[in-house]
Length: 417
Ligand SMILES: *Cc1c(COP(=O)(O)O)cnc(C)c1O
Image (tube, rainbow, N blue to C red):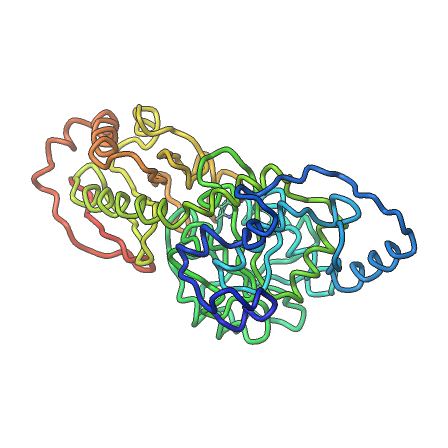
């Protein structure tokens, strides 16, 4: 944790606290002084403005730098105290000065793109694969941005005078491909690097330490962790955070205070959940890699709760055959989910682009929850059995392990027969 981040904070607090401690205490440091244990939820949409002249000056200051000085937020679109607790906590976990929360991950990405576009820096350099809707948002240019798709090594050459952002996901959705964040940050030069850290979470990877100026999360996933809240957040320096707050005020993609409360509560168990689910995911990846009905397994060096695998048989029969695991898009919940990216999460990406990015038609994406590993394996084993032609299953002893998948630290097996 970067100690220099502490200077705005309570001087009495220890200089460094471990991630597990921050997860439970960050954003709650004032509660004892308030005589509270659980964080309060402030549902106000508006706040008394008895002195209009003072409020005018506060609004002017917010319009200038995106910071609202002490006092109530004037109106719910400028800020919310419950949401601010979540933002403070997430910034602590990512090791950044600030964080700004939004209604969803897509609202967060939209705000970043609009901040850069409105500064005349509408060109984006991005590495595929990305989450399907992020890809779609960039590729359609609907926000007035223009994208150049590159390999990680091609970033420096793709940067132009009007490039406002470089965007990568690592591990990427859905293939779990990883990029070397330090090398990528170097290739960006002075252009801000945004790393979508949704899959790794700050428990496994803190991109700001590798040179990312912006760290984005779909908080809907692991941060919330229970499949019951949509949200997004960008962790960054205070200067960029001010621009994001102003854009949030202008365009309205605010996080609801109840969602802010649930996300703060989710953070408390984030390290425990991610570590437990990762251990199960690694074991499932190992078993899948040794299974002849599975032609390839992708599991990242970073670890994590996500496993992607290509089946020799019919992927639709696998998603149709699971009983314990829920066949559903999304990820990062306490319960396991499986989906077919080519049909669902990455359906909005043109088929050619999708395949070129490694999102094949037989690829399945599994989000591992907190169930028992043997129960999960039994469910997968049965669904794979239903999905696999008899002849192939019978060839199981001809399968041989070996080969690696470039770009990911995959365990991998060759297709049987
Ligand atoms: C889900 C997801 C998003 C979009 O987040 P929403 O909360 O669904 O808007 C962005 N990036 C990644 C990697 C995701 O998995």
